[in-house]
Length: 222
Image (tube, rainbow, N blue to C red; front, side, top):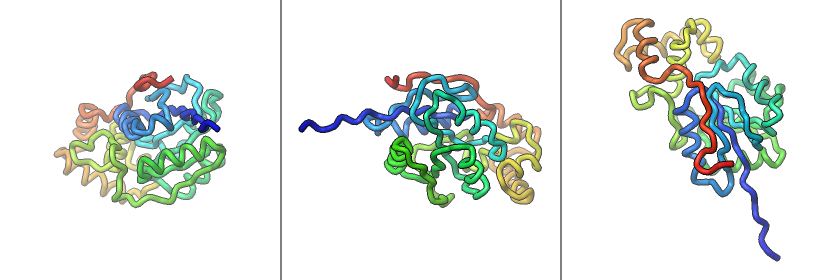
């Protein structure tokens, strides 16, 4: 009996930043026999019919779940999975209520990420264990990484660059106001600025404003 030929599952990667979705695409590239990237979207709705939308939460308003709801309701997306560091129980429960099929940790090794995507495609709901923040999957990228900012610091700077107040940043990231202030002081020191205005200008110059387009048909995808 001839072996069964497995058709790769199709994935759309969604985030507001090119550098983020491109990093995930490179991670998954080594598993092209199992997953195929159909499109990479930054502030553009999914257009290809795909098996799974992988929604990266970098610098997204995490307590504003409208984007997740839009993806879940999109008839061109069979399933939706959130890809994140933030495992606040309220966020997980809200995502599940909206109908997501996965809540996946950015600490997952690439092989385990692909395993999880295949399980979701097979009809399972996959919720990762909460990650250790000190450990980051090889290949992940974000604005400011080359300048020494951690992913969380970069998320906060991105929200500041988008015009969010400290109170709004705290609400959107599920952090306390004092923790946000501490992050901001560290960010100022790392990027050598002394004021919020200077930080925003630095952010604009270094890729912290959202992108607005689609990268279609990643390396021979459908």
